[in-house]
Length: 495
Image (cartoon, rainbow, N blue to C red; front, side, top):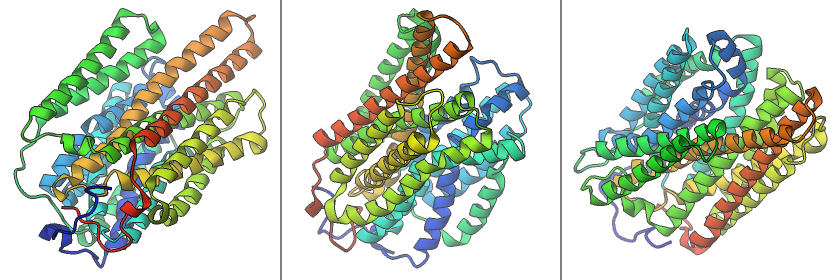
């Protein structure tokens, strides 16, 4: 694609170490950190009933255990990306790791709901430092096309499968230890990664003016919080509620103000040149919409397994593994196919597969067979995600100037987290409305209640499929990159 490669000499920093001798070891360390960040978005899902009972959290407030994390993470990722660029990617990576571990310990030891919510928000804030620094390090460590494809295959597999791994690990820890270990487990993992990262991961940073766009960070975070809170309120008060409409309107207005700030700022948090590139813009939109549909699948499947089918936490976690298997299969294939056929065909195939799987899940009932429906549907869902995340990660970062590598990687992470936050709130609202409508037209009773829950899940899956199809449409209309635009070998210049 235009601007992806350059025949002009790259900056000294971009070409100083095109084949770092410890890049594969560094990839392993970065992968561990990324897995820790990704799985923490879902690891508490299965443990949530136990935590709610233990800490006396109300039904209305329990969703903040999830959204406090994703909101802080998604809202602060752009600032985290800029900090990584200017302060140093390795340094930011290490500080993010330490902070994430300390916040995890605080949450694991929390004696009340308020402290747990605050700890989850702190996890998200430090994750917003850790994740973009990790991805930016990959961008500068792997400059050869095929090696980069393999590195992004690892990253894509973790991004796509980490949520399912979180469900499994949450089930194991909740059933055999305590829900608190869903948070405390991050401490030893972070310690191992930290000790390995200090001597093995190289430092890199962007040069030039290093001022930060704090007003932009405040406005975009406030806008996202208002939107998610508005969607969440709609589940309780309805879409016509004045408070709901005011929050959504305020969120949209703040995001519009953010765009104005970025266009006028001399040191923008999110340079419009990153966002307005046609191919990258398409990748970011697709990432947002897939993230919105994805979280719904994991969240409602977890409830369906435990509430309707009566699975234990461990059984529910094991039942989620087929998604991870599908992601790993597709990510491996995508790493081979990406340099040959390009990003767009893989992204389209991924959207079609994932949406088809979501529609397949709308066929669930109160006694659905795991082997006949749930197993194959989840494998297909995972394959769709694998074929999506690998090319999206590559397309969103190829050709990004070295000075903007952290901001571009932060934007990619932010789209997934923001999409997850908005999608969870939106799909939960659709679920609640569907259950209420079902119960209002039928004779009350235990069997009716269970069928109402299943109906709500199927409605949520259908909306998730719609969001993923919209991601495919955005890819079809916006992404123009061709196979011949991807370098056949050599470095992809970043400056």
